[in-house]
Length: 184
Length: 194
Image (tube, rainbow over all chains, first blue to last red; front, top):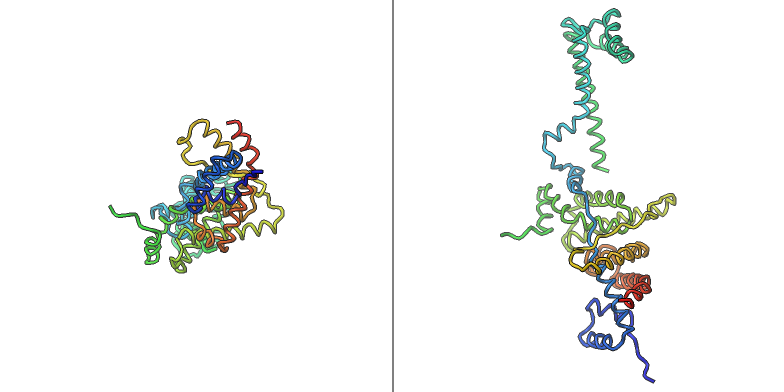
């Protein structure tokens, strides 16, 4: 009886990988010509192998490298933008305070001589203008008037000083968090 | 025209103080590192986090890179180690659900090169493959990915996974055998029908 000895899995894979010796490769190749069963297995191995090899790499966000460099402290963002980004909290704070100051100036609460905190002007005007926010502003101005040194010229400069101090604290805290983030 | 600088040249540039050159290394290796992390973790968000961390660690430990292996191999080892740390954390945290996320397809290269029928068959095969590869045990999945997608040699896979060559070969053989087993019935049908 002429029993056919089929190819083993290892031989099939090695043939596809082209890691067999010339003699073994010829033997497998000849066998595949004569044996339809092994040929079917071979076609399967080749197809899986081919499909695996045709898989490509996962795409990455276009700004991935920039984010890595930012984390390392070597961002590619121009210095002016970095500065703006780093001080964004401060700028936001400054804008809000400027709007508030401008409102006081326009409404006559802050004049060249300082802040008039009398209930008739400040309270009435700001509350009329902003309602409950106005009350908070009145309280804030009162605190400034009481809390700042008397030697400083004018209430307006004191307000600006408070703004700078508050902004600096915000920026420092922000920087501290960023530094901690990059040194985790 | 001068040839593009090698990984080693860029590493030397970074070491000599030009830290911004490291960005080129990131660009050159980001996709490969991400592919490995996605394949191991099966979660794109976590993979991105891990790969970013890996690059930061590579930068900070660049003085330890001696150039005995390729930079990519060294980086992949960092990525793989971080992934395995994440995986073991997940094992401890039974509430983690991301292992149940559906597999992420790795796109086929240059599909236009094959005919319409082949494309269809390839797409079907890819769907089977994605699922089947994702179902492989972690180490077999990693070896299969590094061998086929990253086209790494056995010795490079050994470095990445810190395994002897014989083990890597065994994992690859077992991984492929499992894939073949999964596909055998469907492929038999297709080949017979063709």
